[in-house]
Length: 462
Image (cartoon, helix red, strand yellow):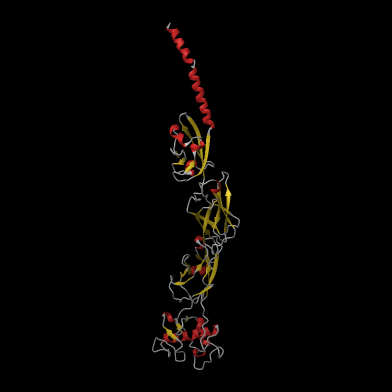
């Protein structure tokens, strides 16, 4: 009995009543009507709160008098919109930022349902949000640092950064512009994903000695009306190519040293400069190819260019040296200069000629000494006087063991006593110095000139 009753109850639950079937049909009809009813509105982003979207109640066929009974309301997860209870108008209730809501999507819309009671009706509403040009293109950094060699050929291209613009359509990034200049241009290129990037193009060869660096304004522009733009600094350092050799301050240097100058004495400084930059402008100094005996006598500081004496000098052995100096830059380019022999060709005016009659060798109206023979003769004459002073027989000096010049030599010449009877002739008002040394050849020259033939007692060097 119980099983029968249970079976009957189960059967009853499986069979819908006529009322249930009618209710299901009515709900299905309402759902179909709701699905068919879709209202669409279009507004611009960033409208202020309270801005009208559209007459929702009127578009649903409701009069203002029906609104209290029908209880029009919106159903949405986030309420960007609201309905005015009196007029039934749809309005903006929250700030609408299209980029925040939809990102880079080309289309952007908000969907929700409008619900009315008595009877129940559900309507789908879709509001399209239009983009406005409320964003400027923006570079990821304020400046770009680049290094380009001055040897780079025109036509070379360099990829630059990509500017970003969250707007879409015609309001999005359209291209790039570069400040006017004579070296570079910029072109807009499109990557496979559709983004636009800037490409720098070298139009004219660079010259670092003329332009070491360039600072240009790079601009990204969108297509809005009016257009908006963003800028960045383009800083280009022109890197040096070793296209300049060192240049010496002088092509030739002249210097002189006393024979008794000690090793370590500074002779002179050579100096060279290089118009390049960095390591290419760093100049070091060295001697060129010269005989070993010359290289033994002198030393050259590679950094300062100072030439110093390494070994004692011997006037009788060598009266002068020609040094070949080279300057080398960091890129290997080399320049040369010479340090010529000291100038011993001193010339004196007619009134400075020694003797009473002024009839020494040389032209009467010219300067004396005016050739090597006359120069050696003057050296021998002074040497002879030195020999007499050594013997205590000099009539030119003021006493035994001293020496001087007679009136016929002065006041144009004065003597200074130095060890071993080597004498320097000083010309008043001049820096010229004539160095004399005792030698067999000089003494012989003095004999030919009529001077004293006594020997100095100094051993002749082989």
